[in-house]
Length: 248
Image 1 (cartoon, rainbow, N blue to C red):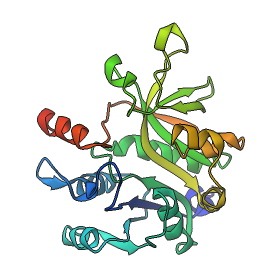
Image 2 (image 1 turned 30 degrees about the horizontal axis):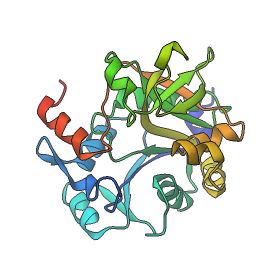
Image 3 (image 1 turned 90 degrees about the vertical axis):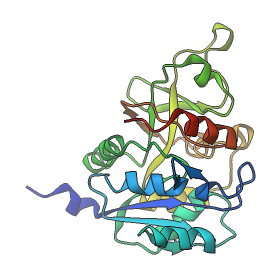
């Protein structure tokens, strides 16, 4: 029997880290539980099964120095990259051996390595999956309703119907939704195609890049994490996590 990994080549994980985020400058180096935010992501990502290469991608000397200081591999990217996906695509162009590329966003300190491992295994098993992501059930309705929390509605086959910052159950409309987790798996060839597309109307309206794929009819497979996980978009979210402490 042929090993599926020989069919789909290597798995590359990229953690894009930008210092000058408009809503939270310096976010990758912001301290959480005594460590830079990006270090939490890197340490958890090292536990992903099937991952062959893991790098932090940045255009900033401060982030590079910090990342190399805790042992991470770093690749420099252009300061002209418009977003994390562009940064990941730039790294992927240098790695033709990679069949699957993971975008492991640097603001997910509670990254669930087991869930990402299932995503990788699912993509290796099904070559029809061109793009995949993670989500989880959010037990706190008030948290799910917040405008800075991205929600995803999923169809019966486990693929995304829509992503939104709006509360899908507001006023009794809509239905149950999952809390989206900022992790993406791409076939390398699709990632390079995706990064070449201009932003679509829905993407610009919602400020959510993943809608670029849905607008063009590309199905996004959603793998569910068994554990709640909080990402960090704002200083207030970081402060809330600091007060709560790490989950066991």
